[in-house]
Length: 76
Image 1: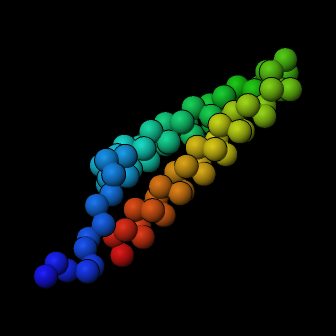
Image 2: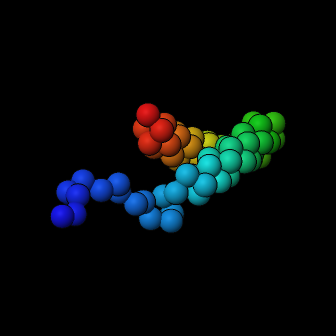
């Protein structure tokens, strides 16, 4: 008789290694957005485009948090 409850096998794109790679990548994306934010603040001709690096930081932070929460839930 086969067991009813089996360990769920996550797909390759949801493995721990891929999640860690994604977290590290999002750290670089957030740093890139923060650099763009500081450039947009320092140059008055770029100030109207400050929303672009702000959006990059916001979306990168969202992905970073969601993947981090997923890994934390998986470990505990």
